[in-house]
Image 1 (spheres, one colour):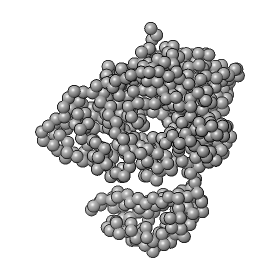
Image 2 (tube, one colour):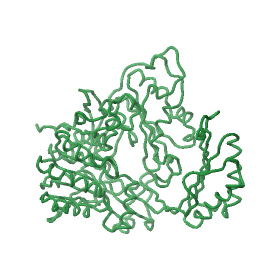
Image 3 (cartoon, rainbow, N blue to C red):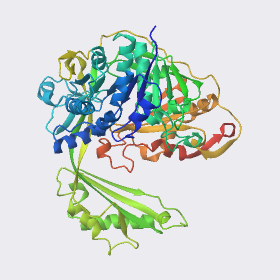
Image 4 (tube, rainbow, N blue to C red):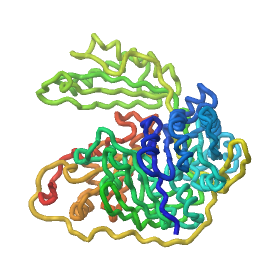
Length: 585
């Protein structure tokens, strides 16, 4: 038996707390330091950075963090694994090597590449090997591609660690791979150890967003101590794949069944969580509070992964412009109608001339407002087109023309007139895993390939049973859903996911019977015309909804006020329903 390996995460996104690496290295014992930097939107940001500064398509802030902790990590034998390499893992490795030289240190640095498919587009498209993730149709046009990166798994990381790497830098791996890789290396797992791998993926999913596992973005944040400075999490992964999620003592926030459940629901689909190394069955996960800020995750089952890898494609979407006009006081609907009518008379183009026009009336105003701000609603007009001229000054000037010729109290927010802004479109795709090998490079040494293909298998998994309790009867009270239930929501490309969880068995029984797709449509009218999938996760007393098309062509193209659907769950929690009195605190 090998001892558990404690893997600490110091970053959940590009721009996270710069001091987090030092906090995790110096705040308590760890075996591995990881950092997750990449998202679909991040790949687009890095592409734009690289276009301005060749070789700059990686997270430079991570290099700064390595300067802070590299010496301590080498002294203590702490391995470092990060996907901060982004679009330029080789450039990132060279930058880290320069830091090491500056500090007089001599780490063994490795990087993993092979995820970037842009140079291979002609080959993959000609052979129909690149298909759309949802429709299965072959992708034919690569002319507008900005990025195309396959989500690699953990085995390139494992190989680099087996070769003695102290620091491993990757491009686009899955978020969980940077945790699963060190665990598989430490415990000597094989590619068909489905259950241990699934457990490590679940642990990686919990800690990959950093402080979201320790109280950040948590529905019941008012119950959590130290929220002004929340600590980052670690996961202690055992040989059987079970794990204990925790944080360093004395740091803010908490690790509880609630915070872990909330993060498990983040950006997922159905119970089968497909990955390049294993399909993790989220409907088998079981949680147990084993001490203060310590939650054990166990019972996780795995199945063979699909024979394909997911690919994140970012395309050039064209240009967009957004104008927001404030409507104040009385007659909001009439003011909105007049502004919209006047705008299109002033604009040299009509809605039919644009690729897309979206108009939203945001009713943020209150009756009998006590402040000027409480009296304001916002009319937001957004336009997209491939022709920058259409969405440029001709569009924004049409709004400015109305300033003295339209509604009383006219003013705008978000700046004055300007040209159209370029935007990207996210497109998910698939590619056969066996045609995307991982290349492991030891800086200053040799490189070799590691296959991404995983042996097939025939595995039967039964979901873990949920609580046996019944929903309470008796009197009901009109109250916000969030008085009892928590939520976590986020983006899945152009789709949004909305997870809802209960913290008690009777509450789960009531939620399971109450919150149908039809009820969700009633509570959130914005999603009424969209396709919605409902998934049950009884063992963690949760439901997860996937709302198709809510975010249009992805975060960078969305015209919603909240383009990443981060607040969708809190909107649901604010809706007032008839709750059983017995469930209220």
